[in-house]
Image (cartoon, protein in one colour):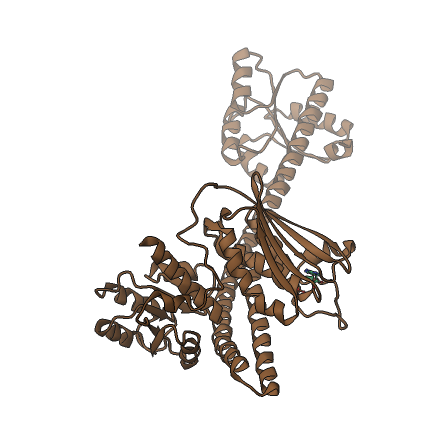
Length: 548
Ligand code: ADP
């Protein structure tokens, strides 16, 4: 601190003796102090204090009107406790009691008359220095406090903004989920009609040109369904809304059954499609739907990227994991692309002159799904020779029985018709007239189908007549929805255990569980293929058989 700062400090001298005042002001003059004022009247101290704003008070103790002690008491009332205001008591009263009383009454220092002027000068400087440092500290504290206040205000503002942003994000997320659910519903429902009728036409039409057209609609419609499924899967994975339902499933059954769905696609390209298993039954505690998605994506790709030879799916049980290998003799992938192909939207052949169609989502989703099941996926490939994708899934439960299923011989014709001498009758509850036409033809010769568009009518029909199966759409235009209708039908005598299959285009996370909890026993997502319906019905029958 520079001396000049001290020299401009305001000093107030209070003494009833002019001689003392003269000595002190003389000293201050000599030492270069420029701002001082004096009074002999102790009653003036308070008003001078407010006007002159002293930095130091040189105070006598024995004075008429107010003693120095009383002055200090008065000052205590107007000086905030946090402010350091130095008072140097200069007195002829040399008793230790007075000194003690002065120091406890507010004096910072105490000197007895006659003064040693060097000592007075030193004390004055020290007290002013301390006062100056205190003021500095106070200023810093104030700056700090202001900064803290400012920062707190900013934080409160940021917090409010964050809460608003979070609420907005949650709202957007809800809107997005809603939008996805609606889009899913709106796209799947018409696809069911398109794919279903195209399927019949391509089988029934004789004219080669028309047959080709129907075939094209069928293939493209299915491609659209596949892409839709991938996008839905991705959105569920991204929003962490994919619900996993683990249960013991027999991978051998599942794969045999599943591979049969690709037989036709392989045949069209002149490819073989084989499967082999390390043992007759490999049970894994896993999510059936996710396992199917994984194997679906791998076999789909294998067929797509293979033009001669074929595709093999091998499943083997190792010590603590199950290994699924899907190998093809197709175009292969060079090593530099091993990483890229697992990235979202990436393909080996990209850009306008890409050689293969596709969204570039399949492998990315497959990898994410495999990882969600705690497994890993690897690729081994050679351009021109073929590729092998290997998935390893950890075995968590062994020795469990897969849920009441038996191996179904896919070659056996008309399994359904062989189950009952009298043809079973099913009721379709759906307000989309196309679904009836499609489902009727899918079930032709195996199950008779009746239909109604309204839940209330469905209840009346069920009360009058016995149906062996009920296909229940969830979103019905009029009256009760599918869930409410199911709940009422379940209460009708004889319908407690009848299969009620939720046939719906609502396929978001949790939808299936919601329909099952409403009383539906099975779930079939739209758009469904004939094979999906037959598989499901066979499933129902085989469970019944094992139950008998
Ligand atoms: P999509 O097949 O829709 O393009 P994927 O994510 O399933 O998307 O595959 C990404 C890319 O990986 C494909 O475009 C292809 O270049 C390559 N690929 C995937 N599977 C195979 C395979 N079995 N043989 C050769 N290339 C493949």
